Length: 246
Image (cartoon, rainbow, N blue to C red; front, side):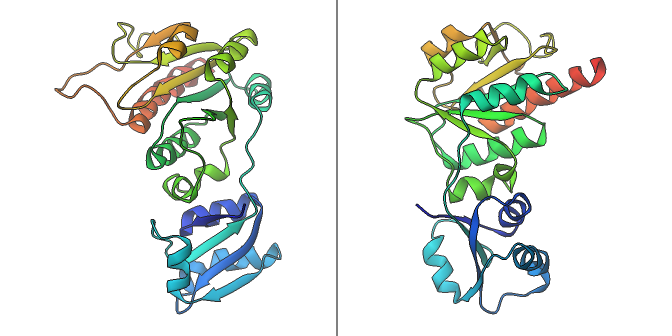
């Protein structure tokens, strides 16, 4: 089923990567100056450009600001788990995958993708059920990150973690209850970082598959962070440690 990607940054990054865009919709009367790069890329790739009234674009993207531009894609192509394992284990750098344990909010998922892509994560793994999927809102919130970060969906998250472990990746779960400090943990290994939803955290079956559990030191009164903020904090420490060693 065709899917919409709305917003200047999201459309631009997906055009750069050639992510199956079949049509570009531009609001009539939209200032062309900010659209010039998008229009040039679309013409270069032979993608049809249609000018429509803004109300037409509003109907296609009713819940999020499209900024006068929407890309129509044939469908979003998820990767297979084996693809992500191969990417992580054949990289010149140490493997780094991110696993999202049933994050249902599309805005949080989009922000998580943006954060993961920024810090060089090689792939994101989502469960098929009880999880947000890659939607227009996710594309928008990721600010184009969804064009670059490979995403796989799996039927059984615990089984997927077991497969990753069998291939030599360390499974590290982030949870506030752990006594292990992220700044004292050795991140110089091929690994999959598992993060849970802000409300429920990691599920029991997922915890059971983790080799280690780590936490972010808390100095204030609040008990938790938004999942993308928490992931960004941990990924920043991973990059810092690996940067010194590599």
